[in-house]
Image 1 (cartoon, one colour):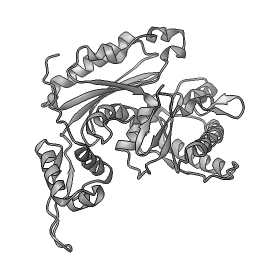
Image 2 (spheres, one colour):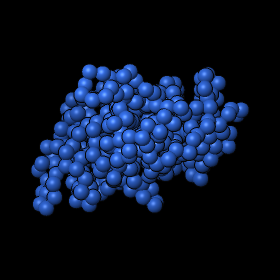
Image 3 (spheres, one colour):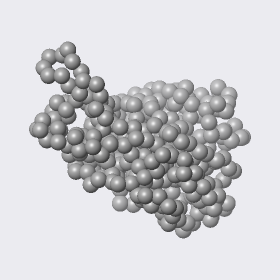
Image 4 (cartoon, helix red, strand yellow):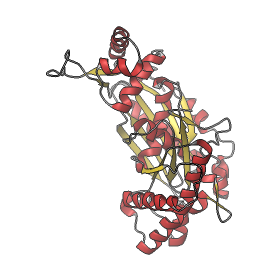
Length: 368
């Protein structure tokens, strides 16, 4: 694939910190950046000038009429860098081009009965080639991130082709930029951390309800996956009754009760109220147990509940989890706040795109 590789400046930790602060707090004048970082005003001026020159920051209109000198808020430049995200799901594969502020610029998808390696590989290669040929500055693409469930071959005999198939390596063969791969539930957590609209603490757990329930954990402002990439695997956590969370709080469980599959979009979500209410109640009991267990282990103050489910269902699930949590014994620990996530079905594809963003532009150099 003939394309120039994006010029990726070797940003210092301070430059990355400036970008991260503006990403999470919105436009900031230099004085506020100096106060937040502890750097001198002159250092902030020099660093932000470099970031503007590289096209990563935009200077807004001068703000006058307040106490002190006029100030110029600095914001992220949407075209400063671009990122590709590929999300592999049980019935849907998605590819998106995401800009520097988290807006999806191009989106493609394909629905199937089940994913096969050849089909997903063909979809991704053709889609990436089309995107690269259709945008004015393809060299601004910093990388491709892939969000996928792990151990796909455990889903059934029709998925055995995924055993030992390295999707990231196969795609990297033809691409001029790096490829990153992470568990889809972890990327949903990463998306809330980087692109989410909620004001979150530096430590929280994230529960994502999709075909199977999954989760992620953020500690000290960074997504943590552990040496074997099992950290935050909340869907696998045991719950009362001899089950795991994914056995109860998953869309697949709801589909079993309905006797049919639900389509991969909110418009086709048609569930009889009594069936949904029972599923929500049972899921909330399991979620509350997992959340409180996470608090006991990690002293987490906030649990975020999101998912590939309609907003009213997500809200009902969060409300029911709060109520269930209030009835669990919690001697010696503080019950956490339970809030709704802000990204819903877009979380995993945005989280995939966040993988290369974090690698090149976050202070730690990576999410994990």
